[in-house]
Length: 481
Image 1 (tube, rainbow, N blue to C red):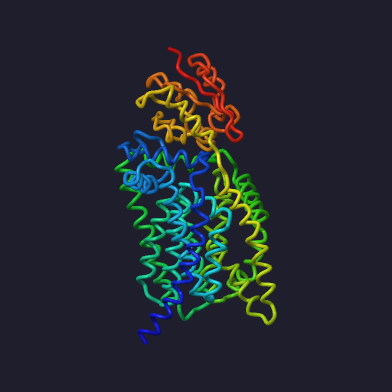
Image 2 (spheres, rainbow, N blue to C red):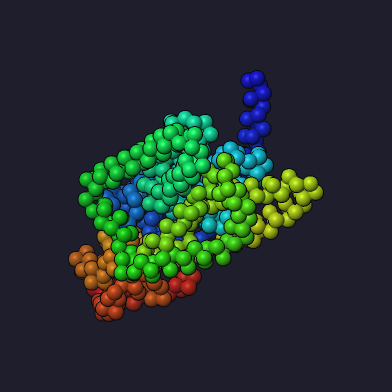
């Protein structure tokens, strides 16, 4: 019996490892060939400053949760401020999520379908893109899917401990990115539907939901209280900044904005979503296995009540479940008599456009960033401050910026978190040596008093050079002696 079990696990382990190696080989190819990524650049700079002893929300302005920042800072302390090692970390978390996709899929479908779910997940353009850059998405999706797997095991085995662990995993996901709560929301909806459909199990379902909710909200609220004590400005910088976005919009305008956002996502990924529909329908109609996954999809409607600026990456948390549902649909086709060819045709039609998009990302190469970095290093000493529209330039040149200059983005400047006058005050009090402005971008140019800010820079700094970098027009200004 033990020998049979060992053979069974070997037969699973080997195919899973083969799939992981295939995914990894694509993800790590030319991993540091492209350095232009403003979000990643901000995170790299902030993590570098923290790894050097800087305190977030005090020495460094950031709208990110500290768990993400300190995870990166710890990693950077070990492996140094090297972009390749930071991106390798997100690749590792993405591979971990692929394993979790397999484990969840294996609970409700066949081994071949579970293996293919890993590939569909990993080669989805959103997943592939964010796996190759240091961003919070791979971290929170990993922990969210860990929670989903524990939730599925709990529902199948009826053991309360799984729901306790799932609640804790969802807390970690949320502490990496606030959207982690949507994983909990999907699982909660599943339990509500099961409660309505299975009267004889209502007591157990209520206990499971209660345990998961108490653990989640208890741990999360306690953590937030502790964080506000450790970092007095945490709430204003993180939660306050996010809640303030879109506060000037009416509820109707927010709903319309969210609806347009969801429609655009559906249009962009229509083949992917349409292939998931048959499995979705089965789950909504009561299939016990699928019903544990399908109710995460309605949580996307929450974006119709969020005033913040909406980006496609916000829906990346749906991709693991959708990948499994797609393969459940295709598996039913594969099992039909004489339909094997159709199965491969559909699978090829789905993945091949993604593979081409992923390949173009892998082959991207640029050298303009490092050329600018060399110029920054030649014009400044290590102790000089550089205020840059893109913080990756600070990171690669190892030059500090100001407090507000630690995070400059469209969301921040357009949202009025700070003004150009605040940057001017920092420039004057801290003797900033260089100012770099993308006059063709949407970061500093979105400052509410940008014209006054640009006029100040032009009169107090000398234009050194203008750089063209992937559609950006970067003007570098040096302080006039």
